[in-house]
Image (cartoon, rainbow, N blue to C red; front, side, top):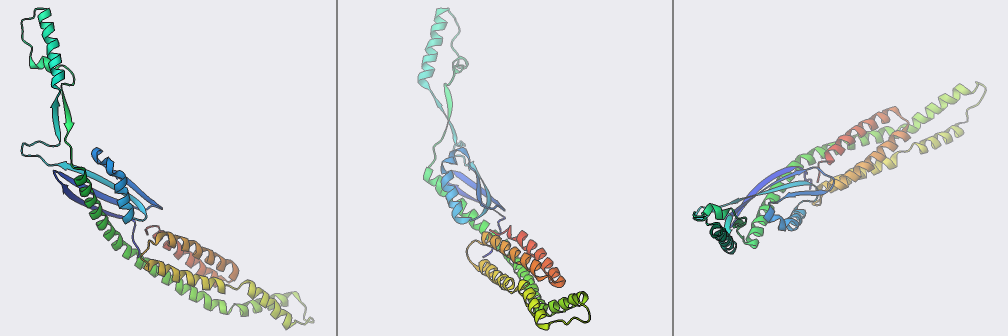
Amino acid sequence: MIKSMTGYAEASHNAGEINIKGTFRSYNSRHLDIALYLPDYLKMFEDKVKKLIAKKVARGRVEIRFSLIESLDEAGEGSVDFSVDFARAAAYFRALEEIRQKFDIKSEITLEQLLDGKRMIKSKERTHDVEALFEGLSNVVNQCSEDLDKMRVKEGENLATDLDQRLSYMETNIDLIEKKAEGLPVIYKRNLEERIAVLISEKDILDPVRVAQEVAIIADKSDISEEIVRSRSHINQARQIMASEEPSGRKLNFLVQEFSREYNTMGSKSGNIEISQIVVDLKSELEKFREQVQNVE
């Protein structure tokens, strides 16, 4: 199955008093590259989240962002609370009282003066149910991964159609090359006879056996039947890979290199202008095929 490497998905889930929202964006990449952005008190789950994603995505850069919204309780309070260090406040109050008595200060000690002491009141975050947080996070990851996969499959269907059309175009041209290659020995023989006729005099006798031998040698050196067979095999392999449930991108990339090798050999061995022109078309189509394969997971 062909899947695209690009896609987008978002999902949210309520974990107790917290709403967890996640967004997934995926792009082309040679390998699996996960960029994960978690709020501070979810960073403990980073490795687990990456393992969940790696089970769903084989290749591509995946950027994942999570945001949290804390619901207010009945008192209208959120996740932030405050605690008072009464022991510290009492000690500070006694110190102020000693100063007041030492210098015979008549005014009373005020709350503002007491609060001038550092760390009397400090903020603290409420504790959350770790299991509930991870369950909510996992639900968001699974939902986003499923939606992302659906989008990548849908785009992959369009890619598969385009790739198959390009394979068909290459197949047609390989058939054409094969037909033209069948008549090459006759062309080689005629060309050889014309060259020899220019070099020898009218009295010289052209040995047909010798000419046939030379033509056979040239034809053997110019034989591209193996390259044609291998090219057809590569086309069949490409279609099998595209139909497989496994990720196809890396295998198709390898086949592109094999196609290129066969086409280059055909062009250099045939020595025929018409075949060379078809090979140029094949190379052009192969480059378009290669560009599309870069989008395949």
